[in-house]
Length: 173
Image (cartoon, rainbow, N blue to C red; front, side, top):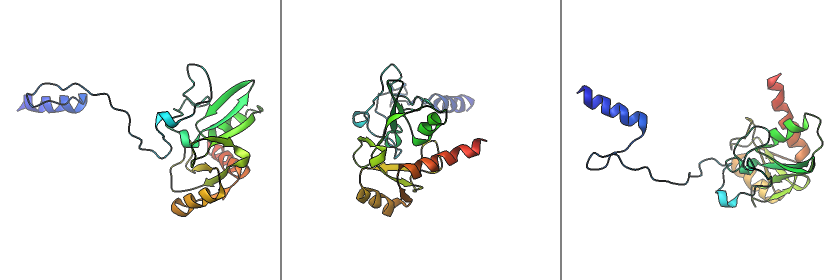
């Protein structure tokens, strides 16, 4: 009985599955299923920055594909930087740097657009990135209203969404 209990515990801790002849099965390579709203298929993600860490947020290191629908980008010191969220963009701005050509991924098109042209839905039922208060951008007011009708939140421009993102930092003081 102890041997059986030990075998079961081993299986639980190692994640090893057995085939019909009680031999360990080989793990298969599967793509990670899209489970979070922020995540897109890797083929649909546009990564704008260069270098070996081009897939990761320049501020916090989070995976930009996993948090693609909240992704922002801007130029700084002649380089393109990509952020997992408006939170990390604001964190960089908080250091007094000047960012040029700020952009955001529009949830409805999955393409980058200027933050000036974006309609943000702030505080929806969809989970946020780096914040309890979600902030998702859309390319048109009509698309933002559709999202709002289903998931709630308040529609605002970049300035309003940015102000809400800055409120996150009050919790750290």
